[in-house]
Length: 126
Image 1: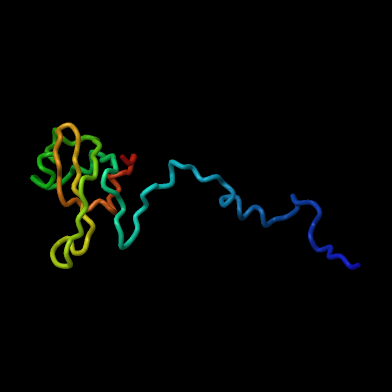
Image 2: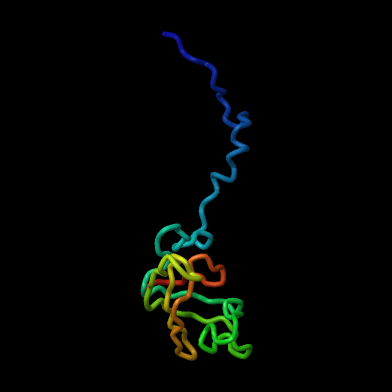
């Protein structure tokens, strides 16, 4: 019987393993978004709790029901209350919009485009 002897018997002599070091690293749960952006569908669900950084509240006056005022700009959480899809015309053409209930003070802000906003991070679902 013939055998093939083209594989090295010592695995440490292989140079190909060096290229795959990053692929062998474990995936850290903190680096993987449980709600990654997906084109053509909703990113967040009703009841999801999001963390909004202070940078999120740098908006034009009146844009966030008073939360954009300089003394009110701070990190806070919010809960997705409703989701709506913008019609094909207008400024938010076809975007997925969310109404968010913020805490302290309890204010609901409607029609926020959050799907690609880096200042809004998923925390948990209720």
